[in-house]
Amino acid sequence: MTASTSAATVPPAALLDAPDDLEAINRLYRERGWSDGLPVVPPTEARVARMLDAVKRGRADVVALLAPAFNAATVERIAINAVMSGCAPHVMPALIAAVEAIADPVFNLQAIQTTTNPATVWVVVNGPASNTLGVNATFNCLGEGTWTNATLGRAMRLVLRNVGGALPGALDRATHGQPGRYSFCCAENASASPWEPLHVERGFAPGQSTVTVVGAEGTMNMNSHSKDADEVVRVFAETIVHPPSNEYTHGGEPWLIVGPEHAEILQRGGYSKSRFKSAIWEATKMPGQRMAARDFERAVQSRRGELGEITADTLLPIAPSADGIGVIVAGGPGTHSVYVPCFGNSRAVTKAFA
Amino acid sequence: MTICSTAFAAMGRAQAAKLGFSRLPIVTIAHPFGLRAREEVRQMAEGCVDTIVKLAEDGK
Image 1 (cartoon, rainbow over the protein chains, first blue to last red):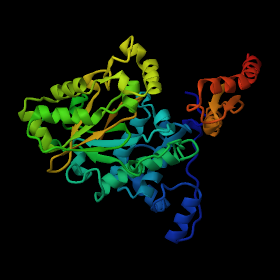
Image 2: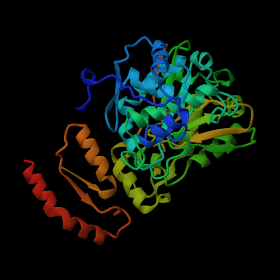
Image 3: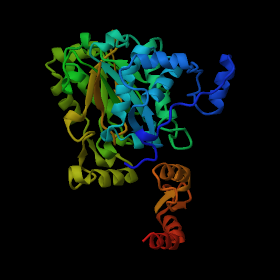
Image 4: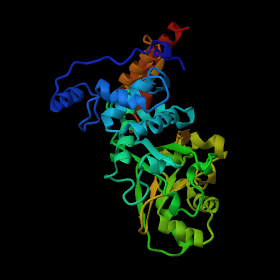
């Protein structure tokens, strides 16, 4: 990729004289389009320095070039946005790893940032850092109330916006967006899971800390009081199947956040994580004729290479293979799980951090 | 050169400039056209095809 900004030409952040007045500073940030709409913590030199002290990399190091503007995400720029979000300094290594992850080509950040779809970056934390950083994996883990979930997810959004240049209505063409674009971050509730955690499944050691980034379009709650594992699989699958889905159009990567109670039912019913994925993959195959004609045409064009000849009777899998279904266990007690529909043309990326 | 609808033209110009192609010719077509009948789309295409050919030839 040729970009006008390279590591050699990234200047340090400019200093701005601003009044010692929180309201005035926030007015300035809103006017310049530097805020997500919520008040920000002013990134003073002292605050940014504290953020930089928490990482072992130079402030000018380029972590990634971020689409669609292809500006350099230097450690300093990430730190500035981390301050603005309200992050604690010890969260910086996780944020930097997440920024590296979204720049992996398979994540397809260019499309995530510029699409009309409501895609955003969902950050999932695994390993020891889930506890040391205080990332909520239990009650209301996708909701408000936990500092790290709120600010790590928000810092990602500010980096996407202020470094990646995805400003709504300009380079960011999201038709509606979604609330998760303010912040979308949780940890896996590994201690309540009967299965191996996500990062181990993806090749990392149990003792490593990781972030996984997912191109997520939203959340759909699934409340089932069933105690029958096969029935749980069936109703999950029926939730996932919906014709106007980018995932069926392109062969995607749907994610499921399985609540601990449902996970236990599934495990007691003989479902390993792998078997659960296979069962969901099979049960979510959808006849092409359920799609609107024009959407079906798009699916035919997009998935011809993957599926060969596609007719109205073809059973379209939601993902190219069962392995393409993402699963974590998270949440508190309750008969709920969550379907996270994803962008389709994107694959999750996991990075370790220390 | 590239072709995009008016809703995406500003994005195309900004990104082309950022990638070092500030003079990239961009042909724009009125947005939206996805909901138009095939014949209407054909008329829109015919309305800009000469421009596309000229820009493509200029870029040789």
